[in-house]
Image (cartoon, rainbow, N blue to C red; front, top):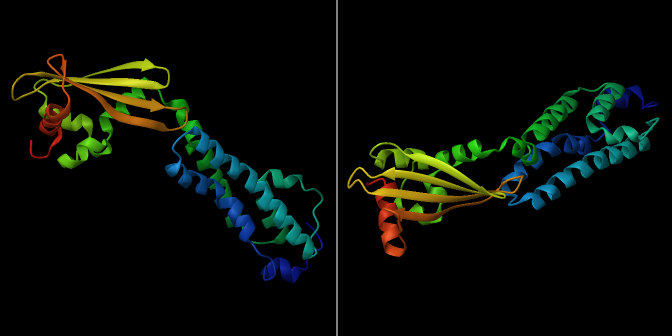
Length: 233
């Protein structure tokens, strides 16, 4: 970028930085929007928009600078937004804060996005997720008032600990927790159905409950779950 007057370069009064700040913060916005993506297809959409919009913002910023008398030897720098922002700050003799913020947001976006995080999701990780998941995450258990994780809640009601097992069926994992109740020594098993689509968890539910080898349903199921997970139990 050349031929920018010294006054404009130093003061930045006529140079608007909104577009480049938007490009810098887009990866952080992508991470925030991941909280509302229900599957990998929405994940592709979110990060596709981020990847396209960042260089587009830089290209639009280049046009703005050209109108102010700045010229750039190549528009290819826009394809590397972080490099472009550092270069822009140095050429215009402005603070490099936005470029540093851009680098930080990009790093977190790369490391923290769902597609990269999914590389570390294995059977042991899914077992840990089920044990640490809040009881209130399952709709039918919310009315019982329990506030513990599944692991902590079951440990309180088990006579001699809880046995955890996992079976895989494609992207779906069936996690079974087995225990003997302290009150009557009955054997209880709970089967959780967990599905991870390679980006996020798309399903988490309590699939099956048995007592002494027989599946319990309807009111009997509700009474048993209340005994296991209610704060009053």
